[in-house]
Every structure is written in structure tokens, then in C-alpha cells.
Image (cartoon, rainbow over all chains, first blue to last red; front, side):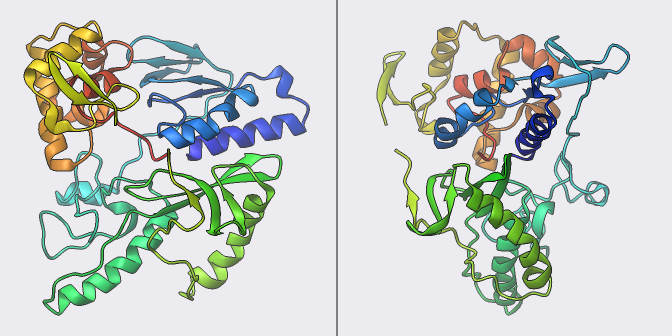
Length: 249
Length: 104
């Protein structure tokens, strides 16, 4: 999602400087679409076209030819650029690789509900260091740690672990023009439309651009420094709720 | 979920034609799925398809192109040669598995 957010922000900056007409923006992805889940594709698919952003899919970068300023794929497609912003392969820490604990991306394989290492029953893995099949988002790390703490205490007492992480993720996506989108999803439920956190009242809207969402993102700065870091309760449950959501068709 | 008949077998598929129940797959079905997208499966193809199935059984997720490449020792270029254009999607389709997805 972050590369898309960046693309929207570039589009926004160029518009505000009156340069957008003279600039071509291309979003290149190794996935088979800018959005790969059905509800998001349906609700947001138009956004890139509306902003005049070209999307190139299934493009696995083989190398960057810096002399010719060309991005080259494994199947020999090419994109010329004046400016390239590219995301290096996201991998876990080197020490994880060196320790032999990690997979081919230096993430530690775990049970995705308990965060216990699948190979070492004395190791729990927190946050982005694990291989859980979801975004490497701060919200995921936050929600998962709440579950791990409860489980760890049970485990350390020799009891069965009774708490299960559902993969809950919460992502703001700035889309330019003082607006943002909000995504709320977990392992089993794709990002859906609706309101957050309250049904109908919101005040934030899911899978739709709104100013309220942008304000929510700005408010998070205060929440981060004054509530999250000092460990004060956020009032948001770790488990994803379906309240206010419109189920997928 | 809609049902369709492939290689004489009734299977559940999603709206992109991917099998929604990986347990309904078989080698024969794989051969037919490949034929439907214009691919004749060689030993090199089968090695990848079987890897994907095994890996899915352990990981619960369809392997990404990168994972297929590193785990089977097959260069990514070769994956594009064997399954042209959209290798990740085509391999998953032929193997009767969900296509690899991002988070949104």
C-alpha cells in the first residue's frame, strides 16, 4: 500500500505546483494489479485512472540501467524514466539470517495466531520479524503484541495459550488533496467498505477517500507520542470487529 | 461459489476461474487447466506445480514468484519462459491454488 500512497502524494504535489500536465506517472508492480483483493479492486480501481496514473502489472525488476535510465524486467519489458523511485526487496534483519532462524527473506516462521516459532518452542517473535502473512504495518505489530503478552504469560506458566491473533491490520492511505483512505482487515476478511470505528457514525470511512480519514491520520501523531509510546490504552480492541462494515458480496 | 466442469470433473471456481477448493485438484486437472491457458506441461512445469502444492500444504499461502525461484533453484527468467506474461498467476491457476495476493 505504501508505494501507492507515495504515488498519490507525488500526483498531489505536482498538481499543486502546476506541473502535473507535464509529468507522466507510472505505477509498476510485480503483482497482477494495483489492488489484488475483490472489494478493494472494485471500490478503488478507478482512483489511479482518475488521476491519470498508468499501471503496469506483473513487472519483476531484473535490473536498473542507470546509464540509459531504464527499468528492465525479467521478461525484457522496459520503462524509461527521468526519476525512478523504487522499493528494494523488503527483508528481515541480517542477524535473523545469520542465526539460522529465518526463512529466505530473513523472517522467522511462526504460528500466525500465537507468534510462537514453528521450530523453536522457546522463541516468540514480535512485530515485523515474523513471517505472518499480512502487511508489515505498525498496527499489525501493535495488535499482535497485545495477544503475545497474554499468551506468553500463560505459556510461561505451563498452561495452554488461549489467545489468538486474527491478523488485524489498520492502514491509513493518504490519497492527496487533504484526503485519505482507511483500510481495516485481517487474515480472513479482506478490506471492506463501511465506517470506522462506529457503525454509521464513523467518523472515518473505509475504502473511500475522505477528509475525516486525513484528519484521523494527523490525529494519530498525537496518539502515537502521547498514548502509544507511553503504553496508555488506545481504546481500540486488538481483534478486528465487523461493526459498521459492509460484508463482501 | 460457482461450479464448472473441467476435464469431466465438477469443480468450484471463483469469478476468475481459480479453484476455490485446492483439494479438488489432481494432476489430470492440472494438465487440463494448463491446456486452457495454452500451456503444455513439461517436467520443468511439473516440478514447479508440485512444489507450489507442497508448499501451500505447509505454509497455507501460495508461494510468491521469488519464493518459488529460491526454493526450487529456478531462475526467475525461466519462470517467465515457462509461464509467459503472468507467471505467478498462471502457476497458481494450473496448480489449483489461490493466486498470490497483496494485502489490499
